[in-house]
Length: 136
Image (cartoon, rainbow, N blue to C red; front, side):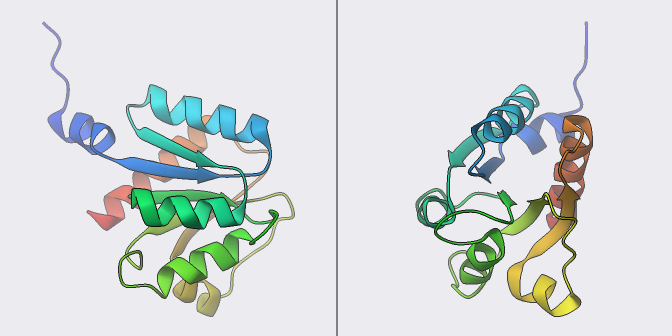
């Protein structure tokens, strides 16, 4: 008989993550890793679609690319942070440029971690769990 930690099982199965990236292969890899870990995953391919999905889906966490069409990931997160219904949503930002957030940007956006591309899917999953555990 195998016992599964109820904390780990509940943490992932009850959590919804919105992944927003204009690179389809990134969406695929990240979504697959998260689904395999038991998360519910919703995807968007640009900043405006991400904003719309965040309003309709109310995810527990957003993983967003920095540089995208329509809205940047930073602008997406800032807009969500300004609205009462979405201000609690934490975010992880993916960046190909090694971009770093200043303290004010982090506060205004709800972005908790930055990961540079290319990234390890295993490291991303560990970061997701860290950010979600901080929120709990």
